[in-house]
Length: 151
Image (cartoon, rainbow, N blue to C red; front, side, top):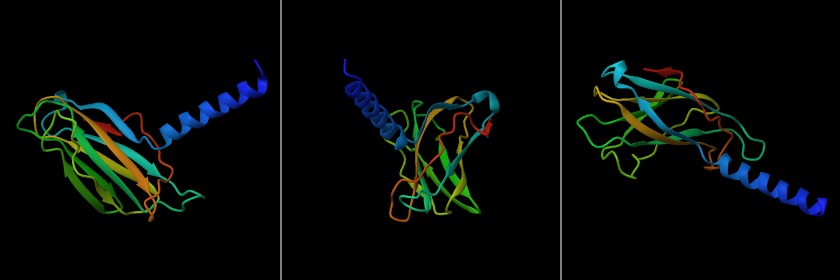
């Protein structure tokens, strides 16, 4: 096999993988645990950065999808940074529909994503989020692997 062709193929594969993960900002298959009580809250820290290509982050937007079958309690997602907050709730649960997007415009830095419930059952969820410039271009974003608080 020609080394030049192999090298091009590996670079192309790497570029495709980078492109797919660069815009896939998800926290998937997490659970607010019943063992932590009805007031349990998971807190995630997401950092938004500036980019030489698109500039500073203007806002973080996010939406929530409850994976647990419908029950009395609903999951709520709060975005918080620098004294600003927005809330969204998945009213249906256990379907493919997310809550509406909400956003907080607070620039570059660390945003908190808080998922809470009022039930004493485990509640599984996904979060989709995006750091965006003033022109709605994606800016660099961290993908947290563990919550800051899991209770």
